[in-house]
Structure formats: structure tokens, C-alpha cells
Length: 378
Ligand code: GMT
Image (cartoon, rainbow, N blue to C red; front, side, top):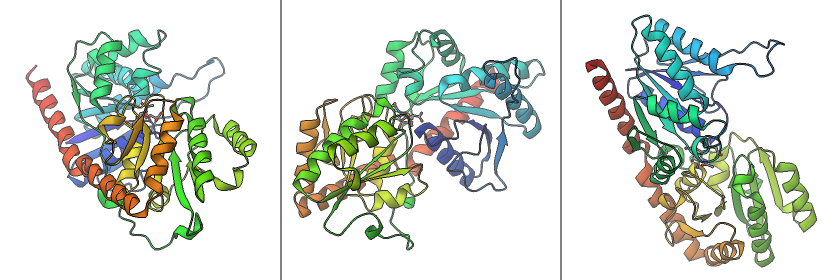
């Protein structure tokens, strides 16, 4: 199949999932066309059947906001015609599903028929999409998609609760290529991150309020009072300055490494002992799955889709949002006994197996096939 993938090219989970999906589909013989405003961060290899088409939005002084949706719709029309793309898979409803619908309508005028698969990722529904400013357009685009998927049962339920949805929503969970998380690299050593006797605690996110990074800092503050430890904070976002100031205030700044937008997440995780994800809301928690694939137990909140990923008492522990005391207690329970830590590490990897790329990607292929078959009959 010739598949067009629209996504955010940034470090966010939806862009990562879209990129990994495209790469895996290309390995399975499909021709993949990424259409977005920058080369996706995890897209390192452009090959015979992986292409990247950049959406340009020229600045024009008349516009207070540059019309990205318009540029994207036009680019989709051009790319579908030029490369004979058969199906468009858009990740994150805003504005991708809307732009794809416009492209589809423009193409119909030229007697070209391309179905749209929309994957809902989380904040496009729970935080941004349900805002009254966007809700009518998001509802419309979901209902007009030819197939809709959500990355967890929880996100499906949220979508049905928050929007008036007429379409069926299929759950296709996020996935991971477990072969990429085996610690098989030679150019990096644990000693770069911490001393032998120090436990490595890690948090990776876009450092937005929804991630509750303050809780990460409080939990780490409590841990390091009980045992030698370092905190790895990977990612960039609006909370960073405030969080740095908080670390100074608590006297732990020298124990916290702010790693920014790292391309070496697999290495950081491989050397980690514990992953913290105390988010306010999380449709899935891809970062937690990446940690688990790297044999890292997870201390998380029990919100949204996280319980579908992190299994209580097996791959880690879950607590109510904001219950830092309980999260600290659970973290210390895992870290304070080497044999127990080893068991949790093994369990974390074992739990991640369920989300292997080889199990999940065929589910998307089936959705493409079914959608195309249905679409061509109409
Ligand atoms: O975590 C974020 O805020 C980024 C956001 C995104 O779309 O990039 O992540 C969402 O999609 C990820 C991939 O499906 C999920 O793993 C995250 O849980 C989800 N984030 C939230 O729901 C807050």
C-alpha cells in the first residue's frame, strides 16, 4: 500500500508513534510518505520506500496566525496526486484530521478517492480538543474520518464521553520495537550518569503542567534522603525554569541532570533503576512503556490509560494523582532491596512484551485494508 502519514514531527509521543509506525510499515513492504512541517525526530532514514514531504507555510504579514491547515491540505492534495497515495493516516486530531478531510473533499472534485484513518492520541481529546474553541471542528473531523483509532480503552471512553461521536472507535494500543531496547551499544557507560552506588531515577516528558514534574522532584527529594541517587530529567518544556529553581531551593540541583531533548533516550533508560510518571492525565504513557522495555520499573499515577500499561505490583506501582507520599513509599520499596529491584526489572520487560511492534502494527494494516475495501465499494 502507499500510505501518507501526517503527524507532529517533534519529540511528543504521537509523533514518535507515527514515525515508528511508518518505519515498521516500510519494512513490511509498504510505501510511506511522511507529510509534516519538519523531518520527524526519529526519522533518521529516508529510503526507497520512506519519503518525507515538507509542508511550508510562508510568513505573510497580513496573517496574525499563519494558516498551517490550509498549507497542509494543499500539500496532501499534491502528494496524493503525485505519489498515488492510497490512504491517509493522520495522528493527533488537531488540525490533522480537519486538514485531511478538506484534502479528501478537494480530491473528490478531481475524481480521486482517498480514505482517512485518524488516530487519537490524548491531549487532542482530553486537554485541547474538548475546549469549546475547538470542539465542533474536532467532533466533525472525527465523525468524517473513514476509520478512527484510539491508543487505549481509556482514551476511547474519554472521547465517547466528551464528544458526540457517531463513528466506531477501534483501540489500537501504542507499541514498541523491543529489539531497539536491548542495551546493545558500546559507546556509553553507566558511569557517565552516576556513581556505582547511586540509584538512577528517570523522568522523560515535555515538562508541561500535565506531567506534574513538581511531584517528580518531591519524590526524588524523598528518595535521595534515604539512599544515594541521581535524577535524569529528559525533555524540554515550559516548566523547566521553575523546576530548576525548585531543585536549587531543595538543595538537590547537583543531583539532577537536565538532559533536554535527548536523542539517547534508549541509553539513559537502559542505565535507569526507576521511572517516574506522576501525570495528571495520560492517555497511554508511551514513555513508561519505553522504560519498561528497557527493564525499568515504573512509579506512576493511576490516571487515564496508564493502568493499561503499568501493572500494579508487577511492572511497578500506581497511586492516586498527587499522592507523593504513596509514590515515595513504593519507590523506596522497589529500590531498597537489590533482589526485589531485579525482579521488578524483569517484570517490567515482560509486561512490555504485550505491546511488541510485531503484534500491534498488523492491527493497523488490517484497518487500512478494511477501510480501503469498504471505501472502494461505496
Ligand atoms: O505527552 C504528551 O503530552 C504528548 C502527547 C502527544 O500527542 O505527543 O502524548 C499523548 O500521546 C502519546 C502517544 O500516543 C501518549 O503516550 C501520551 O499518554 C499522550 N499524552 C497525554 O495524554 C497527556
